[in-house]
Each structure stands twice: as structure tokens, then as C-alpha cells.
Length: 281
Length: 281
Image (tube, rainbow over all chains, first blue to last red):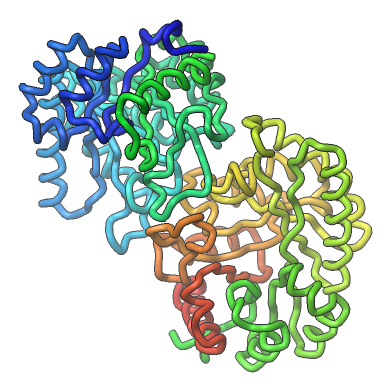
């Protein structure tokens, strides 16, 4: 299927997918390609200026579907915890300024020297209890992203959609939900049932897609695959998410150095084509 | 705790932990260190000669606790499937010759171009149905090893202990069980309940230990950590496994190039010390 003829109305481009582009390039490139939505990251937005980035996107007619990322809640030290809460309040404010209702959370790994996964998960719940009402007052929802279990020690002790929902469901759905990201959950035979559970509870705050390819690079962070290049039944996951009644944006988030090395416009065209062929399908 | 004074009666050294050693070096080194058991791998055993390896271990007073590995059952092609079954029958025969009752299975990843995890898992069940009786007749049990989800596409579509048990429980416990390996399951909040389930059904055919460290190397296969160097509550897992009534060997299986670069005897001494300090605890 050619991207020209495909329905791109739900496609959102996460900015990290096209890291080679500045924010103005992203805004211009997406608008030119007929894409109406983007997901943004805090660091480049802060560098550009939050208000200024919000205006840039508005002027280009772009919706901001999510802001990445808050989180990192697992430090046991009180000063570190207070700093994390303060930083997350800022992230919530930034999300509100950008006009997105979704702040993606990467919850944090094990503290140095710790082997206490359950304790780390409880500290995430403690932080959500503090931040949930603050977010809701600003029209922002906290979206817990379960990360692939290979990130459990250093980035995120929430490794499955089931775990993310166990945490989220302690709070109102208007405050805390989850991210369904194919890259992180594709291997899990419990994922289909958990997608149903998430949808039924109104907890799917973000749906992200990337493909799984091997071999993984050292450090594994930048090993995500272009849609269609890997092992994930992307269309199947999209159908599962849609079947819950979710009709929100589908955000493409690929961290891949080979994609970043290419011309941004070419990369975007390919992403749109792959989205049409493998996600809409 | 010094390894001299520790109870090493349950310690088994998987041969890949000391890849720098030949089979005679392994037999001599373990016997000299007061270690009574080893886990072996097919390729070096075949190279040395199966009968000859069996005699070598017997003469050194060593028990063989497992043979790695059978499996790779997921190819849809009939000729490939027939070849895999034949190879696994040979592996079962080798295990019997070595006097071990445990053949560890790495079940296989997705076939090239496939995205059908459920189909691949069913082909594993089909193979177990054929091989289980053959193994039982020879006093060998097939032990499904769930591999960390980062191996789901290229090595093993069985990613959790729960999945492994779902497969194993279709067959008698005398034919098919599971491997509990801390490295693969440590992140999973369902693991404790699944260890109880595995123990209650007499399905824990092997208990293996290695630690989780980051950053992962490229390809991720050789990233396992020395006991105590990483994130896993090794003692906690040992206690959980013991609590089910399991009193079998505890096999140390660490794939780590830095460990292989060292003098084998030194590496073994360190493994025994770490086992005493972190697994027995």
C-alpha cells in the first residue's frame, strides 16, 4: 500500500523516531507529509522552550499525543525522591502547556546495590499517589509504560502490561493508565488478555509501535526495528487494541541509529509506508 | 563465607561456566575442589566421545546433573522437524549414556519470516508428545527452559515459567518438566507463584543460577553475571525452590567472556565462594 493513499489520520510520529530533525524540521516535515500528530520528548522541548514548542506545533496544525517522559520513582533516598516528584510536577506542567493529555512514565530500575523489585514497585505506587491528583487537575494523565524485561534492572521494574495495570488500577483512570507498546510486550502470552483489561478500564492512554529485531546492539536501547522488519504481528496488536474501543493515536517510536543516519524526509516517508502496510494492513 | 567451609554438596558446575577448560580439566578441577557434580554440553561431549566422557566423569566421582541441550522444535518445514526429532533422540541417548536424568531444552525461536508465536509454541508441544515417551523409556526427563524474553524471537518462544509449565503439564512429570534459571525469570512477579506450581507438580527438573548485570553486550548471549555481581536475589530464589521440597543440585551456568579469560581454577574458586555467599547465604 502506498502511504499516499493510506489513512494516516491516527498516525503520530514520536520525535525520537526522527532524532535527526530539530523541532521545526519535525513540525514542517510532518505537516508536509500530511501527518497530524507527534509525540515529544522533554529534553529537546526544554531546549527549544516549552511555550515556543507548543506554539510551533499549534501553528503547524499538529496535535501532541504524548510527552516522554516522567518517572524514575524508585530511589529510596528521601532527597532523591523529593527531586523526582518535583521533576515530575514540572513534566506534568510541560505536558499541559504542550496541550497533550498524556505523560509517559518510565518508572525506574533497581536502585544501585538493591535486589528488591517488590520494594521498588511500591515506591512507584507511592509516587503515583502524590502525582495523580496534581496531573488530573491539569488535564494530564500519567501513563505507566511497561518496559521489556531486559530493562528491569536499569530502567523500569514494571515489565509487563499486567504489572502496569496492577499499579494503575490503584488509582482513578483519569489519573493513571498505561502505554501499550508493541516492542515491550509482544513476547508475552498474557498481553492479549491484559490489553482487554486495559481497554475495559479506560486505561489505554497511549498506543505505541516499533518492531523487534535481532541481534540486539550493545546496551540494547537502540535496537528497535522499523515496522515490518521484525517479529511482531503489528496488525494483530492494532486490531486487539482497536477491539477494546480505543480509537486514539498510534504513535511510532523507533530508536534506531540506522534510521537516524538517513535523511529525515526519506525516513518519514518509509515510516508512513510501513505504518500503512504493517499496522493498518 | 569461605568456600572451604561451605557446604558444596548441592553445587554443580555447568561446563559453559568454565569454557576455558577441556573435559579432563573440568573433571580434575572439580574433583580437586571438592565439587561433586557438573552439567555438560553436547558439542564438547560429542567431540570427546560420549562413552569416554561418561567414563571420565564416573572415574572422577562426578555426577552429571544435566545435558544441554535439546530443543529447537519450531521449524514448520517437515524435513527440518524430522531432523530436529532425530537429533533430540540422539541427545536423549547421550543423556542416558552420561547417566543424567535431565535433558535441558531450548525450544526454539520464531522461524524466519514468521510472527506466529502461538503456532511456534504448539509445534513445541507436538515435539514433546513424540519425544516424551522415548525419553522416559531411557530414564531421561525433558526440561523446558524458559528463556528471558529478550531471546523470544531467535532462541526460545517460551519466555516465562508459567508458559513452560503450561506446556509441561500436558505431559507426565516423568517425561516433561522445567528448568528454573534465575537469570531468565528474576524480573517476573509471577515467578514465585510459578515456582510453587512447578514444585507441587514435581516439575522442577533443574535449578540453575546466574546473576543479571548490565550493560548487556551486543547479541546479549554472553552477558550473564557472576553470582553476587548483579540484581538477582539469589538466596531468595534458592529458598523459594527449596520450599517446594526440591533438594536437587544447584547448577551454576554463567556465560561470560571475562570469566572465560581467567585461569579456570581461579574462576572455579570464585564461583564456589560466590555460591556459598550468595546462593546458600
